[in-house]
Amino acid sequence: MTESLFPDHLSLDPGWTKDTIAVQAGRPARAAGAPINPPIILSSTYVHDASLEYGRDGNAGWGALEAALGALDGGRAVTFASGLAAATAIAALVPAGGTVVLPSVAYYGVRNVFDRLRSLGRLQLRIVAADDTDAVLGASEGADMVWVESIANPLIVVADVPAIAAGARQRGAITVVDATFATPLRQRPLDLGADIVLHSATKLIGGHSDLLLGAVVCKDPAHAELLVTYRHDHGSIPGALEAFLALRGLRTLAVRLDRAEASAAELARRLASHPHVARVNYPGLPGDPQHERASRVLPNGSGSMLSLEIDGTAEQTEAFLARLRLLTHATSLGGVESLIERRARYAGDAAIVGPTLCRLSVGIENVEDLWADLDGAMRAVLG
Image (tube, rainbow, N blue to C red; front, top):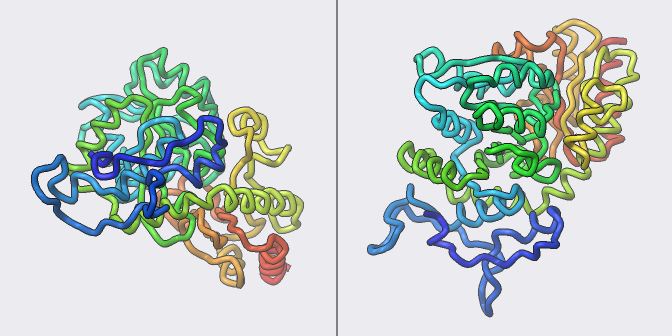
């Protein structure tokens, strides 16, 4: 639907890297007097007769963003009002009475979606540890969908996407990979055998903590068409401004991610030897249990997310967070500013994390300033 509003995009060179594609994909075709950025179209209805009649049918801004994300991930993209709206649409692909394999460590919003569907008798769930590939494949026997996160929230667990996708396909199940933490610049799950990729574009793709938007990229165009119909019928459409902002954010993703990832790796290294830190989860650390797998399935980098457990109490952890001056004590992730929070404050995560585990989204501030803030706050509270 969206392509008819914005049919002509800049041609992409097949030899371009993903960093360059992120900058160039989704732009209007070059013509004298044409804008280099797709315009924001603010309209709820369109003049007859055309394939588009109403705002739920499509928007040029969605088309541009979807063209860019599809080029980056190697499939057809469909955008939604939020990452959770996108996840809910994917869940609708499971046949009535079907079975979904879900990781025990996953974004609590997605767990809530599937728990609700299970409670309604809509589907069955099999919960397994995503980093136990044999367990995932065993659970996928007779399943319809296998859901994994390439880098899992909030314990930073890495799934063996190629092995899981291959095994799931042999067993007749489709594989969905939430690649929000990895982004298309660190992993293209469709190239690794997955069928569907989910992104919360609210996070690293948008990159500035100023929008809500989700995206699904499908290998099979038939899946994409089903999702387009779902979006239209359920009204889970992204706003025109949000699509514009997400595409603008995508333009700088490569430089933002490189900077944030380098800082995350350095902070993880220092935190791992800090006297007041009991544990650091970051697959880029050579001693991390996820390191070997990450080096295979995320060869271009381990991302900008890490988590750490404070060697103290929940109350001391809250006091540490309250003393931070540069890092912001807030939820969400992937923005240019660094964010940190104690995840056990949420009932959905309290069952899977320790009381002092903090998830840290590293932004693009100077790493020495970030370290001084973290180290200073911990020493002030813990001695």
